[in-house]
Length: 222
Ligand code: CA
Picture 1 (cartoon, rainbow, N blue to C red):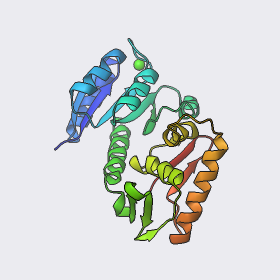
Picture 2: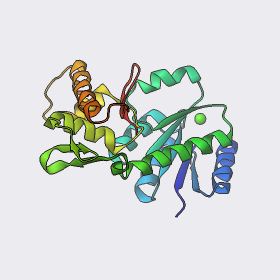
Picture 3: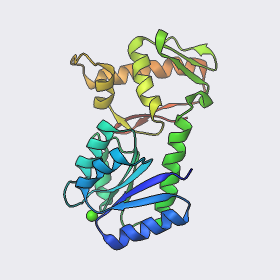
Picture 4: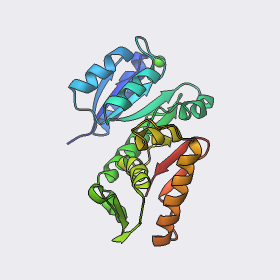
């Protein structure tokens, strides 16, 4: 079945161009021109990925992104008009899967859409990487070898592994790890990640699977 892409873009010609290009590439594409229509749409229509412009009437792309991230598992690519804004956006904990800067070629957009969807699908089976995670005993293993993670390390790795390639800020990881709202410092996340990496490298010496994203946070990518 074709992947379903929602294009949210108020420049109608650009939206139509993207729509046609995506359809030509075998996607099922829909278009919305306002930010305040997106959450309802995603709730009522099966959607695999949202191409989300930032400057939108009704509701800003930032707010829409936060709401989608909190309430759905849909993949999100943010489209911004300013390349120098991407660093700032990354720091905002939006949880988008990728960022594209205008002006872009539709070909580039399609390539990025395919890359994100490929990553997400690969993420459906982290076992492909030889990684298995057993919730009942907080047991994570690589190629059958137990990593010996603590419960907190297990939770942290689980968050990252759920969406390969997605960048998580330290804050998002802390939220996921400490559901009892304990106050912990950013450093705590760093030190847990350091320990996880050490345990992984003991089993898999020549390969990094938990990557740091400079100035932002961490991601899992095989
Ligand atoms: Ca716009």
